[in-house]
Every structure is written in structure tokens, then in C-alpha cells.
Image 1 (cartoon, rainbow, N blue to C red):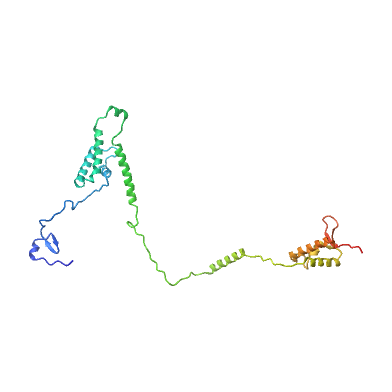
Image 2: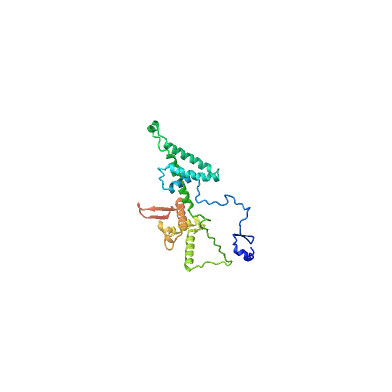
Length: 277
């Protein structure tokens, strides 16, 4: 906005009440129109008839279980009259509550009939008190929820942008890490061991001939000695021992050898079968 031009000396004696386009305005124009509702100040705002009624009761420290209906109704009607002069549609629900207050007050002023004394109809204010207590409880809960911090209103979540470098860095490995990795490899190697079975061709006929050659040089041979190697039975492979035993059974089947025992639990001996001359 451009700076205003300096005022002439005669304008300094008559102070301006405003400036319009940089020019001083020393008096209000005759055709100035200000609407009646151009400036309104509401010190107290209410969300409905129950809110207004509860405000009047709590402000004057009245007992909500024993409401002075005459005084509260009078104050309520004064506020409703102010609303009605400004906004008739808004005052409709307030007028409905005013009629309810007047009806309750009239029931309290009327003398009770004999039937009412017998039935004990109760306090006409009971239903209004119940509604006020329920509304006050809901209003307190709403205020408690409204005081809970909300994102965007009470706090803002921080946002941090981290720029990653183009150079890739690798973590350092110490000797203990290598040791643990090596032990893990050994453990898995034990779990994945394979047992390979080789195929060995053994001839029963050859072992039969070997047994006959052994028996020809000795008259009696103990059963265990037929299976002994150079260092005993322990150094002979198991497949050879099995085939040697099968060969001995085949010789006994063909009556080429005899298997004898002197008495029960005595050592077993093997010899060549006796053949008459």
C-alpha cells in the first residue's frame, strides 16, 4: 500500500476518525448504514435447552435434586425471549423446554387430589432431573474425550528424511564370528553324513574249497578257528564271515564234512566226513 501523503496544516486541527484510500475521514457520511446484527458478542454459547438449564442450575449452585422451579423458569424465559427476538427458528426448541418448565411448576402449585395422595405420583421434577443428570454425564465424557491429545491439533508427528549414501558399507567380522560360523558348518556336516555300501562279489564255492583244504591238514578243527584270520576273528570282514558260514553249511549238506560235539555245551568241532575205502 503506498504511503499516505502528508496532511495539510488545517487537517491537523481536526483529527481524522479514519482513512479512506489514504484520505483522512473527519466525520461519518450521512448515508452510512450499519445492519443491527453486524456486531454481536455471545459470552455464553449453549448447545440446546438442557445445556442452558444445566448452566443456570450450576451457576447459582442449586441442588439439582431440588430445583427452585420459579426462579429457574424466570431466568430461562428471559434468555429465550432474547433468542426469540433474533432467531425464531432457533428459539423453537427452547420454547418447548420453557413450556415443560411451566407445566412442571403448575403441577407443583396445584393442590393434590385425594387419589394422588393415595397413589403417591411422585415429584413432577423427577423426569427433568433424570434428563439433566444423563446430559451432564454425557457432556463430561465428551469434554474428557475432547481433551485427549489429537494428531494435527495438539501435536504433529515428526518426519525424518535420511539420505542413503551410494557407497555400500559392509559390517566388520571378528574372529569369534568366524569361529561360530565354522562350528555351525561342522554341526551341519555331521547331520548330512552318508554311509556308502560297496558291492563285493564273494564265491561260496571258493570258500568251500578253502574249508576242505584246511580240514585236510588237520583232523579236527574247532568251529571258531575256521573263521579266524591272521589276527583272529575280529580282523575278518563281516561279509566274508557270513559267506564262510554258508559254505560250511553247504559242505555239511553235501555230507563232505561232519560237525560233532562230545557233550552238551562242549566245544563244536568240524572234520572231514568219513568215507569207507
